[in-house]
Image 1 (cartoon, helix red, strand yellow):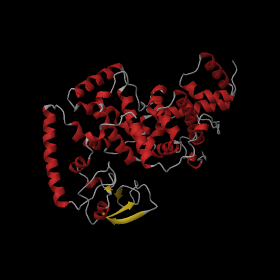
Image 2 (cartoon, one colour):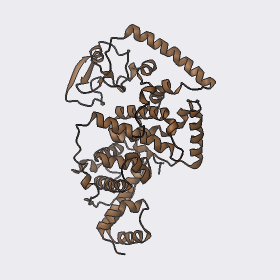
Image 3 (cartoon, one colour):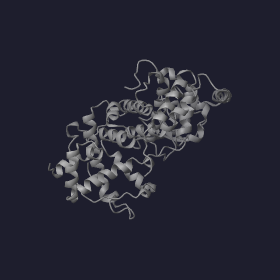
Length: 200
Length: 217
């Protein structure tokens, strides 16, 4: 079997996955040995697979795991618990009660967040100047790299932002967000059930 | 080489996961934390590949984990738990993307052209010094190149080459045929090679000349 460069380029992906017949594999290897261009294509494609398969390619945001567990806490902790689990739950209940009291005394009113997934916070200073984008759902400190649409920004106070349904950015407003506030804003797991197949 | 994102689970690990899942089903819900811990990064990576935004990807990953918990009884032992979890994350991310970014058009996502790509550059790129990935600017350029792929190529590439799902698992996760996975994967790999080889091949220790060589695809 004789293969041309075009055949190698068409099969390089299958070849590197070990998904070609032995005869074709041998023909590709023979061709590549004598072809600089195809050597470059095969080596380079192999390198792409290797380099992107390295776990260092994905940087998980700082605190990701902690925030994930905070989000899960209110839902996962409902079952049978170990003694330690009960201790954690009791501590969480005390914290949540404190958080609720703080919210009642310091909240500056919000009619409902723009995003069902957003997290509210009652600890952002009401008079702090923040920026919002018209179509976005979160408010930020000026210069936050997580602002989606930088072309239509408004600068308003945090009080106004929350009154308009914006929620604090989980990155730049992180220091104002506490576990109590996070737990209160999480969707109930019951809201996720029902009609939707989780796999589609 | 460092282990990939998707180091394949061995049978012992699958047994361990099955026992954890059984405990969760019997009411010991906190075992769920143990179950998901090895996959937190992978779920985030899958969400980020589709949403291209850290905050959205994080929220999506959290939501996917919640759904996995809620629907743990639907998990069937014939599949890998990691694959099932990533499928949920992918579907959650795609749903959000449809909902929130329906107005965005990606002209590169032309189904009719998805299988054809001729390499445009034949720069030699033989060696990969592992330490190059320690350099933040290199990782950023690699992420930038990945981000410039059309959505349909990026999804396949991430699931197959970064999450290390099989061709069949990738096809199931995305709801496409294995043939489509293969053609999109070929194109994604060649596009990335085209973009990266001129700068990275043989120029590892010099400045990042490939940063100026962005191609118009």
